[in-house]
Length: 194
Image (tube, rainbow, N blue to C red):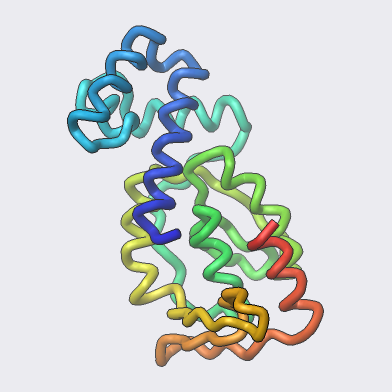
């Protein structure tokens, strides 16, 4: 799954959040769904273009429903975290946005990403706290992540023909990531391939 697919999936989820939270009514939602086929845009993008929702309204609705603060003035973290599961974060729609030495602050834009926080806590062994960020900010951070945050991964096949992204990691020059061993590799494999 590439970054565009992840963003499209999250936008689809946010469109349904807008409907569930009463930000759009069923008639407007159905009208927009019928236009999606003609435009190629996501439901969420068309809701914004039609002026039915704004990112701030969506973020406020998410904050109210889940009791998680909205992050303001967010920038992606520099790639200094060692043994950090960047590929897992990208796949889950999570972006590290801060590290106060005690806990990692993670930016999320959709409720489904909240489910991955517990796994991230297990993978890093650190306390993890979430803050909602806009989908456009997440998309911007993910587009930069290939260059600045996330190491490139190569997929290799094991002797059974199964693809395995955990064996070979080719980090960018300023990121040093050691190879995972035994239990770490098995835990990440279970989390990424349920």
